[in-house]
Length: 92
Image (cartoon, rainbow, N blue to C red; front, top):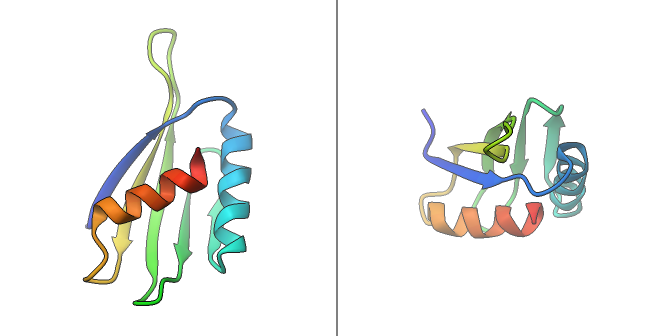
């Protein structure tokens, strides 16, 4: 069961967004595995690791696509809002 669910709108190319996110997470010492549909990631913090999964939801003519992030494990002291702020930095 997800401890946090975060949705981030896709602005531009999905492949580029995921490549940028992979690079940022790996540069922070984390792992990012997956493709343009789904995958998983983990990144360390001073108080413990954050782990999660992502799914890409394609847009339609009237809606933009989004990446849905489900945080599956996190340190107790790290809030979902803090995680969302950091993930948005990686993805925007």
